[in-house]
Every structure is written in C-alpha cells, then in structure tokens.
Image (cartoon, helix red, strand yellow):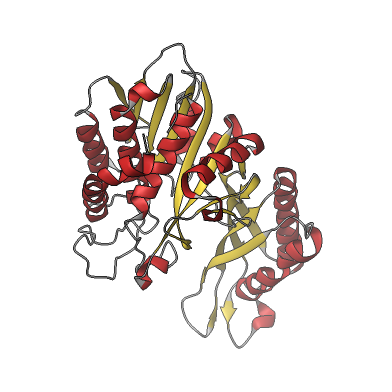
Amino acid sequence: MPVLHAAERLFPRLLHWRRHLHRHPEPSFAEWETQAFILEELRLLPELRIRKAAQTGVIADLVTDPQGAWIALRADIDALPIEEKRERPYRSQRPGYMHACGHDAHTAILLGTLYLLWENRSLWRGGIRFIFQPGEEKSPGGASLLIQEGVLEDVPIQAIWGLHVTPQLSVGQVGLRAGPFMAASDEIHIRLRGSGGHAAYPHLTSDPIAVGAYLVTQLQMIVSRAADPRSPTVLTFGRFHGGSAPNIIPVQVELSGTLRTFDESWRLRSKSLLVEIVRQTAGSWGLEADIEFLPGYPVLHNDHDLTIWTRRRLSELLGETHVLEMPLWLSSEDFAFYSQQKPACFIRLGTAGEDPDTRRPVHTPEFDIDERALVIGVAVLSHLAISFLGGKA
C-alpha cells in the first residue's frame, strides 16, 4: 500500500479539518469546541476506544492485536493569544486568538493518520494510541497532566512520535536530531522593592529601576562565563515593569524572563546562580528581592536508536535528500515530558511553500502553512506506525 498515495486521497478531508480548526482556535486548557469536533470525527469510525483526558484532551486507541506491540502518536490542539492579520478564507473567527503555531495542522494530520491506519488495519498488528493533547502552550503543559493520568502506562507503549510544522523547511522535507533536540525552558519572575522618591534626589532612594536594569545585563555573565559554551544557554527578559511618571523613582519593579538550557544538571545550577546574584546585587543597593521560578518544560530528548530507525524509514518514504539533520532548537516543547518516560522521536515537518506567509516564523500574526504539507505529515506518521508494527507501508 503506497502510503503517500493513500494520504493524497485524504487531502480534501485534511483541508476541511485544518481550516475548520483554524477558524475556531481556542486557548490552552479551554479547547472545548476543538475536543467536540475531534470526538465527532472519531465517532464515525467503529472499533475505536475513545475517551476524554486532561479535561479537554482526547485519547483514541486503535487495536488490531491485543497481544501485540503498542505505539503512541501525539498532536497538540491549543492556539495562541495572537490576533491574525491576514484576510484568508479560513481566517480565525475568534478575536485575539489564532493557530499561529500550527496545532490546527498537527490535529488534522493526526486525524488523517488515524483514518488511514483504520482503513488499512489489516497491514499491521498491535495497538496505536492517538493522543490529542491540550495545553502545549501553557505551563505545566498538557503532556505532564496526561502522564499523571497514566497515558503512557495503562497500555505498554514502546515508542512515541510527534511532529511540528516548521517554516524553515520546505514542503516534502523533514528534520530529525538524535539526543537533546529542544531546550528546557523555565520562567523567572523577579520583584525588586526599595525606597522611591523624587527623580532629582536619587541619593535619597534605593532605585529599583537602576538596579533592575543593571541586573538584566549582569545576569548575562551566567551565560557568558558560568555556562559551558558547548551547551547552549539563553537568558532573556521580556518584561520590565515599574514606575508611574518620568520624575518619580518607584518603590518597586518587576522583571520576567525565560532561561533555556540543554543539560538538566546545569539547569539546576544556573537557577542557583541567578538567585544568588539577584539577592546579593539587590542587597548591596538596599533593595529586597523576591524571586520565583516557574518550572517549564525539560529538555526534549530524541531516543538515539529510535531516531536512527525513524531516519531510515523516512528516507525510504521521502528519499534521503529530504530527511535533514536539524540543529539544536532553542524553543521548548512539552513533548519533552513524553521523551523522559518512553523512547521518543520528535520530527520537524517542512511547511514552507511559494506564499511568503508560509515562511513566516511561528508565533507571528502572519503565520500560515503550505497545506500540501498535511499529506506529507499523514504519510510520515502512517509509514512509521505500519513499519514499527510489522507491516509494509
């Protein structure tokens, strides 16, 4: 059964699913309409075991041999609080929200994969768990909640795959990397409290704005001098809030940022260094400092053997020149939680085409995909599933 040809036949459905989801984006952990839509499509297929999970998620099990091997395939379903700029036939109908990270495509691809594998269930033996996961964009991440509910333990999952749209790659290309692939990311929230006063008399105050500004640059020493340069580290502050007038030194400022790392032991040590520097610096200038870390997602680790196997299978499907070695990726993904529990492989799916908007970065209001990539995504996941479970794709 030529998988690419079978996926092509699903293209009208894939378009319908993706465009419906794009028109109706929902925020993390509030994907109620999305859940209902997925359930409606899944209930058209007999022999599926379907249940809700993590409130707005959906789990569907397709089993051809209860004694056979099990694998899992995952898609995330939430959208972002971004206002879509472009006028498209499938433009978001929910003001202030948009599928600007491609989760509409991920969901459509997983639906298409389920349909294809259901139609060709005579070709493979075992069980496949399809995970439609909520809340990837918001800590603590829907993956962590599903794992707490036992999504990887109540059946003997041997491997799990996920994929993500990637405008840096063209349609027909996929990207892989064995080992550490995507960064751990933690949120940092700092509050500096001092004594405010008149801007003309800074010597009578302990100025939290001046100290906060100094900290933003001083803390970069953690990256440039304490971090192993062979292990990327990124510290970025995206929020600095304080003050009410240009001639008043405020009592308090707040800073928020993210710390991205690729090594779990360094991740812990870098947090300790940051806390120490903030407290010492604030104290030396007469300020009090409150520091809060919100644990984010861990390092996404692609299992070495599974990734090598995946590369071979995708080279069979797409050709070796279309399966690329990816660099380290500094963004984070809660698929990382699955990779801590089971052999996992996360795949970058090329979605760039001729339309300039298909080359826009994710998380931007102009973002779009070349929808031909939906077919490639279905073929990729289907080929991997059938190959792993003993069939011939």
